[in-house]
Image (tube, rainbow, N blue to C red; front, top):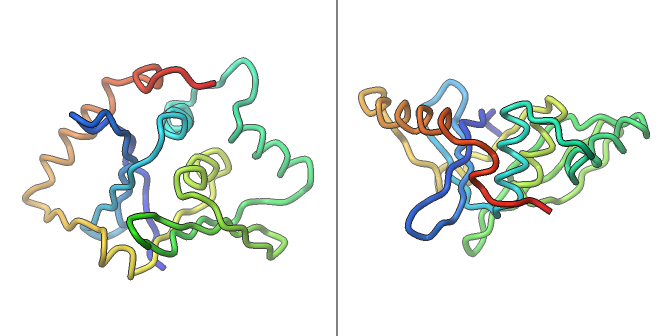
Length: 156
């Protein structure tokens, strides 16, 4: 498993489909994962430190874990089958739960848990961007700085 960093979320045009972009820590591979609008909003909220008036689903999950005295230790993005990514939540009590990567990433950002991806997933879906093409990634980061969670639509 290789540690990943969350670069951010954006809406892919013209499909209007949000993606979350992960980067291999200490490497040059990026992992784009297409996600839903609600999850994109949840990830953007977490990255921007937005605190909703009432807990959203991922905030509630974090609060329940705290109340039960269990920590999310890490998120493992384990597989890509038929175009669908799979992840596991790994908790401090040894329990592992299968989850969508989008929900897993939103929860990891709220709890400080590390995110990992398997080498197989990165080999299949990762995109290597050499240092000389890093300016494109910087443009993406600049784009992320100009958007707000509200750009992803209403979250219910």
